[in-house]
Amino acid sequence: MSVATALLLSFAVLLLIGVLISERAHRTVLSTAVLFLLGGFLLGPGALGIVTVSSGDPIVGGLAELALFSVLFTDGMQVGFRDLRTAWRLPGRALLLGLPLTLALTAVFAHYIVGLPWLEAFLLGAILAPTDPVFAAAIVGRKEVPGRLRHLLNVESGVNDGLALPIVLILLAGAGGNNTHGDELLIEIVLGIAVGIIVPALVLGLERLPFLQAIRSLQPLLAVSIGLLVLAICQGTHANLFLGAFAAGITVATFGPEIRHEFEQFGELVTELLKLAAIMVFGALITPAFLFSEIPLSGWVFALFALLIARPLALLVSFIGAKLSRGEQITAMWFGPKGFASVVYGLIILESGIPLADQIYHLVALVIVLSILSHSSTDVVIARRFGRNQSPTGQARIPPH
Image (cartoon, rainbow, N blue to C red):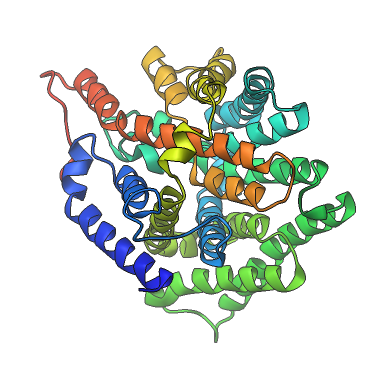
């Protein structure tokens, strides 16, 4: 059986299981993300050996690249300029103060606990700064959780991937990754943003012409065509396709809100499929030796500090004076699951050729694994606590399925 066939069959089986247990997972600590992570681990070379992949395989890099492009494109669609103007105060605190503080604290821990040089320590901090509530879906998807808290986590996760990416690229170039010079990197970044703005603007302008309007049933495909155009043009011009995706999503959300609305459900499903496939492959790359032989005790200590201290302390500072209850603040401080973007950024570092690439990737992988396991197993519990606090009978109010 070829690697591609084994991957497809494994993904299909895990997806079927995930769909069949999704209703129960919505009410318990079961998690679809954990299912695909553990499934990939068990099917990978470290256990059953059914899915035999390595970090250098083209299918791994291609899948991760496509998934992150989709993630950033759909994330950008959630944060149009109108959205940011009307409800920016709390997410702004988390992004403009909490994100840099999380990055800096993580870098300090990486330098003093693991012994990474400062440049590589800040690179690691930038990789681990983004968050992704898909690993804590019960928090952002349940009505018993306060709306402002759900909005805070949604907007924060939708923007911080794109904000962290330029920092990752600049620090990676500084560390000698891929022999990219500063002027070339700047051109890639600027060109990616330009493609992400110009292409959607032109397409949306054409769509508004009387003889070129798309019927409503096909409007989701208009957004898909924009994404594919941006992807192809970025690859053809060597523009940064990730920043192109993020800029394109924001442009569509700003100038074509009706297109965003029609694309929302379809786009989230496609992105979720790509994410789960990439998480399965990421799990297959992890072996027992990877976790217990190749990562020293200092690495485990760092991972715990990164999860339990860096983000909570950063958001504690950023929420000073904010009108959030203590429970809402604690929940926002805890639910900073290390996002899917961190998985891909880690793979980019691994393939970059910098001297400490392996060590950085090991630390990234460990933090992500611990984050998925811990955050995905506590989201329902905390969501139910909010439900009990809001219910006059003291019973949790679980929304119908």
